Each structure stands twice: as structure tokens, then as C-alpha cells.
Length: 411
Image (cartoon, rainbow, N blue to C red):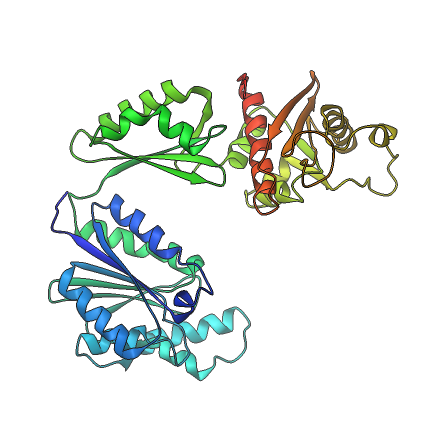
């Protein structure tokens, strides 16, 4: 990797400085740049102040090869990113007819009525800027090359910024800076804390190439390997083999794989359908499934909460069982499998400390019923309303995956 290729990341918006929103763009961009062999040497947050932001651009271009800025590309008077970069580069803004037409078509296609004239601001360019298409919104990005520097302007909303980065900007940087690109592999881990994983793979942090990073995520812990050079594929493969040997069945996937996605693929491969009686996640399981294309063909139905739909016979067992117990989970799994006529039924209880029940706070139970019988797992969840539903949903998909693969776990 060339040590001369440095980048600065600018996050723009007074709302960031006031704490009204959290800056997730900088973290995302720093990680993405690293994968390209580009080192982020500085992150700066700047408000919507023309003098300050113009100075920030000038200083960044003096220090670094690449400047990546997000935010301030909206249509309002306080969206000053275009104006400030134009001033910093001593260039003038002018209307780009093609951009204007694209913005007007966006409003027409999405039935938003007449385009407000303030949106014309988003169709302005400077001579050294090339527009970057925004398929998710009205604010085009900019790609600017001048005086040996590359300046990239991205929209602030992550739902617009991240697709633009992946589809438009990253491929251009790969062409612009060949030879610096790293080979990466992300391994995903369930059932271990970040500190426990860190301790288990500690010797591998000193390899140098590949580099190893560890990150706590809502679905568990991620380990990211980054290797460079001609031997990168072999280095990555060897390191992955070592990690899997250490962490064993705790490693459930890699790259862009998700637990719900893997569960759906395994069900499909086994010609199985499934249903769920979810008393613990408040519908998070169903939401996760809805994001998977054609998952409705596999997951035939769900019940969320404790109530039995009207017209179905009430289960006497439910009134006789602790609301959070292995027996309750099994009853839910058997019931939902029979009612929806699916190959597999999942029963998810609530979480002690949140949903009532007796026992250790954070305890929940996941049960699976199929033609071979029933199996139940005790799951420990941090009893916090903001994170517990997601943790329990991920746990349910992990248990389903393990069962379908025939993997026995003792955690």
C-alpha cells in the first residue's frame, strides 16, 4: 500500500455539531477507504457556516490526496457544501441542464407534484466537477479532480450515501488508485462476547498481513481480515482456517451473509416451510424476514404476542404454564406448526425482566417443532428494551440454522 495516498473525511451539518443526529457516515467511509488501501488521516465535522466550511476544504486539500465529504447537498439555503467547495477552488457555479431535467423527472416519477424551485440548487456544478448519479434522492454527488487532488461530495442521508459510494465512487477509486486494493474477508460470530472473541484470537492480531479487526454488531461479533500483496488470497484463506479452528461452531457466516437469509436458503434447500409464534421480539423476526426476497414462500405465517387469533381454539396449556419456560416455548412451536401446516414451527417466549415471568433476568426460550419432535434452547439476552428484541430474533435464526445443518451446540 502506498503511504502517500491519504484521505480526509468531512461530515457537514450543524445538526451533527448540535447532537441532533449521529454521524455514522464517517465510520462507514473510513472502513471503506481502508479496504482500498487509502488511509483516513483526519475526520472533521463542520457546521453550515460558509467561512468555516470554505476554510475546512482549503486546509483538507492542502494536506491530503483525497477528500470525501458527506452532507450539505440539499436544496435549502443552509446547504452550503457546493458553494464552499466552489469558493475554495476559485470556481463559479452554473446550472447543468441535464441535472435539472433529472431532478424534475424524479419529482414527476414519484408523484411529488411540482418541483420546488429551490431544488434547482442541486443542479449546479463547477467546471472541474462531474456529477454522480443519486438513484435514491434528488441530490447528485460530485467527483472533482484539480491540482492533483480528488474531492468527492456525497449526500448526507446514509440511505443515499452508501449506495452512491458502493455503486459509483468506489469503482472509480479502484481505477484511479490501482495496486492499493486489499482483499478482505469478514467472519461472523455468534454466542461469544467481543472480549471473549478478542482473547481467543489474540495471537492473530500481531500477524501484520493480514490485519485483523474486531467489531461488536447487533448480530454478534464480526472479525474482518484485510490482506495485501500477491499472496493476499492465501494469507486470507490461512487466517480464516485458523479462526474457524479456534472459534468452531460459533462462526456462522461471512461477507454479506445474514442469519435470516441463510435460514431461508436452508429451508428452501430442504423443501421445508416454517411458521413462528413470537412472544418475545415484538415482530422483529417478521420484519427481518420481510427484507428477504420471496421469503413468504418459505415462512407461511406468524403470530406476534400472546393472543390466539379469533376463531382458533384457545390452548388450555398456555394458561397453565409460566409465560417464560421451555414448556411454553414448545407449546407455541407445536401450535403454530399445526395451525399453519408448515414443516417447522418456531416458538419464542418473552424475556424475563422485560416480559414478566420468573427466573433469571434476561432468560428466554426458543423451541422448534417438526415431524421428528421438539427441541428447546435456553437463551440469555441482555434485558434492555432497545436491544433485546433484535438479539432474541438473531438467536432464533441462529438456532434454526444450526438445527437444519445438524450442528450440536452447548451454548
